[in-house]
Image (cartoon, rainbow, N blue to C red):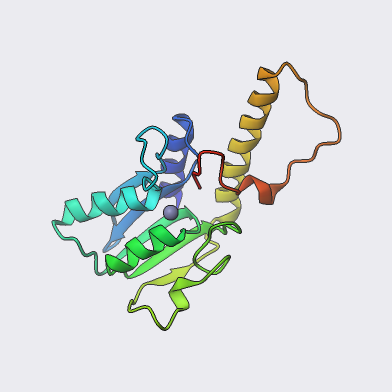
Length: 173
Ligand SMILES: [Zn+2]
C-alpha cells in the first residue's frame, strides 16, 4: 500500500485526484497506476484500470489470476467490474469511498452471489494515510480557489472529511 500511496502522490503532482494502485504477483509489484482521467481526457483512467492494463501487458495475458491489486481508495463499480473480468484474486484498498465505493460503502459487488467471480476485497489498510492524502488535496484545491477569488481563509468554515471524498466536478474519484 505504501507503493500505491507513492503512485497517488504522482497523481497529485499532476493535478489529478490522488489515487494510486499497484498490482502484485508472487510478492512482486508487476504494474503501477495512478488516477489520470483529466490529462488523458479518459473517464476510465482510474488508478486501478491503468494498473490492470499495465499488468496485463506485462504478463501477456488479459486475465490476472493469482494477482492482487492494492489501491488507496475503495474501488468504484467500473474498476470492480474490470478486476472481476481480469479474474484478479484479491483487491486490497485503503480509505472507504462513501460516494462511489463498490466494496461495501454504496454497494458490495464482491458479495454478490449473482456475479460469477472469485475476487476478494479487503479494506481499511493504511486507511488513515490514504484518506489524509485525499483530504490534503481537496483542502489545497479549495484554498487555491479561495485565493484565486481574492478571499482569505473563511472563518467558521470547517472542512468536511466526507465531502473530501466526493467526486470532483470533473467526475474523478
Ligand atoms: Zn474506479
